[in-house]
Image (cartoon, one colour):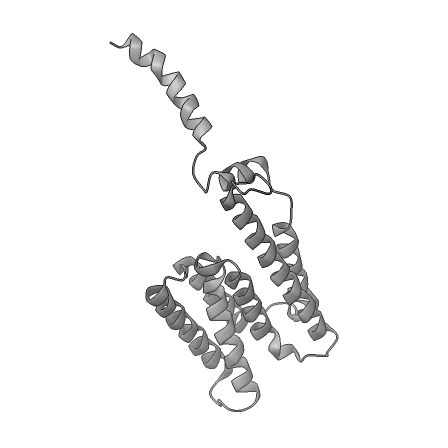
Length: 197
């Protein structure tokens, strides 16, 4: 336990990193409002979201939950800019798909090279977002900056919520079942073992 608060170091770590990640998401939401007010062009949106994911994952270290969407979405954002500024002149849908696939390859490379928590599900979901964007006709309001800002802000505020008793107990035990639970289980098992002898 820490000398100043009496809190288990794991509980302190998980609480601090979760709150920092939440603040990164809220910061990204604020930047996206600049897109809404046309201070930043709309086509910067994927890159801003991708970098926000990176910031939120970075504060949690190698086990950060947002590394996978960070790689895919950031590469998608770079692909969008390359197309927007005519550096890449292929079909935009093909451009975005290739950019997303490059993000998957880079993410997996970092996973096996330095152990970043780049999960297959996160990569698949992020790449699916690119495909939905390219091939599904969505209402125009979906592509407004405030929509993305609201989603990131809600996500960030959710992570800033007070911890439940279960989450607090798990963090304090370092992600393992508490010793009290083990002792309780042992106490219940002792009479049973005596009766079976």
